[in-house]
Figure 1 (spheres, rainbow, N blue to C red):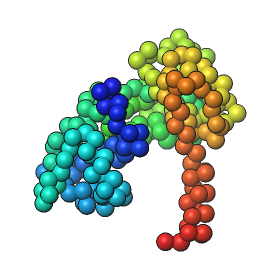
Figure 2: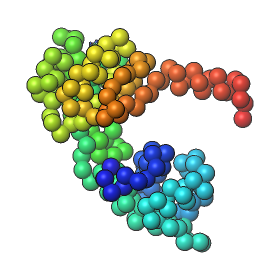
Figure 3: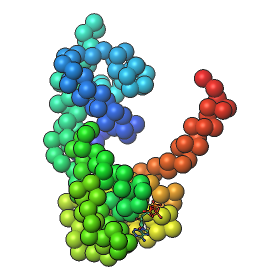
Length: 211
Ligand code: ATP
């Protein structure tokens, strides 16, 4: 995100990609404007929060008109760096890593996995989803200095060691899909997504907090 938008609260910033994806779909279907109520129903965020979020970046909806889709889209593109390609690496080409390489985020935005790393000789030197898999031993030598984000899909016992190496190699953001809780310096951001915990939480909520 651009430095001049640094004052947007983090909770708002986290919702921007959600808004962006929905607005892109609206735009593709030829819609020119959208009300906060429509947006709210689509992205499941209450409309007061949407109005407050949008007010941070000067998008003030007009009563009876709503928001201009094109204006919002160009703002989001700029803010989310959608005009630039953000290159990412992935470490651990197992089942989950392989799925990410095939998916490769290309449908939704301009984030792309550029290289993948593994320690398995059978995988090193092959390509998955058009992405080359390299030996993790070569990480420090071949990492593109522009790359600051890594996706971690290795076994949890290997995660911390690899995270340390990623940080030393200049990685500033790690999307951690392993159950391991990583220790990193304050200058590095880790977003942790434990899919089994999420699934268990959903099942628990369904059972104990029926809607
Ligand atoms: P698979 O069936 O391919 O083994 P998996 O998702 O069940 O997939 P995991 O044991 O979670 O396998 O390992 C994920 C991937 O991480 C594998 O490709 C494995 O070779 C790789 N891996 C294991 N240890 C390391 C490590 N220390 N550094 C990098 N990659 C590793």
